[in-house]
Length: 545
Image 1: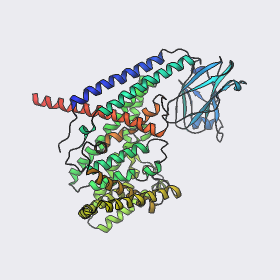
Image 2: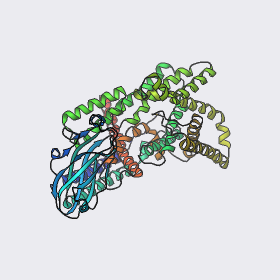
Image 3: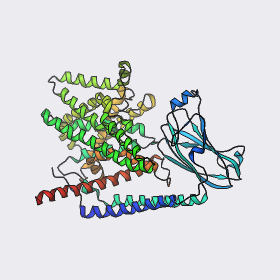
Image 4: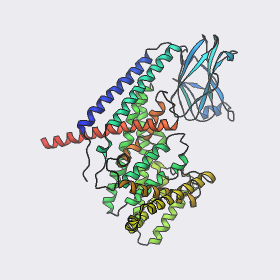
């Protein structure tokens, strides 16, 4: 198959120009704030605390919470101060923190609460690393303080708390302007680079890439915290990928099959984990990590990728899919080699039942519910792969009949699967439970599977119809063709989006979705152009030799 190469003459200059503009905007924005010295609050170690440890930052967790006899109490004030004089005026409080559970803090004036215009609690969300909010002091206060409240769950580390005056606030808005300008440069980069140059060969079945593309878009939407339709997306988006894998399955010699599994799944898994770890280095540098801290963080990251422990690998959670799919396809290959069809069907059904009840089985057996590399999902994965393989048999048998149907009949047929899927997933959501394959959460098995399969068939049939008018350069096809790369950096893009300066409400799910889509798209464009440069360089060297 001939792979399309990006047009390097058009792509590279635009990418370089936009990247320079973005870097300049970011540099100026941070330089603006670095020069601001209007800090009201003292050093962090001059704050006061109950129960909490100070070691280059205030820290508390569940263990410290229990050891101090606070178990059962909620919203315990664990950091307060600095009890300084603060004049009447407008101020900005900036808190740098890390937390695994939602926490809160509030502005406080001892016996002077009426002199603070805003004194409600401020939430410290899990996804962010910094909060910045404005408050007004109506009269001078002698004992001004900020109180940090611990909810009693998870970990909380306060790296820095600063209070800035009005002049700093003006600089803060100037920084936001430059960061917004940088974001515009990124968007222009993505828009100007034609997606068609990254599309597949015309020899491929475009509807398969299109279905994958829609699936990846659903993954991006499902991982946008706060999306009200997460329950619907999770009801079928992962089954869709396994069903497509079953559809594409072909019986081959075991040696050839094993080689393909390694090259298509395990090698990309290790490479993408490594790439994510390197992309985290600039984030750690901005977060004031020491060199030894960065080195230690990378070792933990790499060890986590080898052990398949996702909590050691920030931004790599979606990558469980690759090794889980590889093992599932291998087991499906073994089961599919059994000559007796009833036995095969029985094993597929058993896999569905084991996967559905995995959490209860794991508790009884005394083993973890989550296994390395997402291997606890393979039973459910095999069931959906088998469904995809069966769908291929039926599709090949009836495709001529389906092609002969008139459009109204086709649309009614496709709409029936949509209605069936929506009904099943909605009933599951309202009366049973939402699906999440990784955590083995399901509703009613008699509703969960029909809902996931019906919606997957709807997407597939819709893509078959849409692909008739689409080319290899259409956006859903390009996204699907490069699906592994894009979903691998979904969480990385989400981290950037949630920590981007608050020029917009980043916690609004649609803003998170759009921002991370821009960041991941730019990374994709840069990678494809660098890939093209490397491949051309190697070809030139071979020619010279």
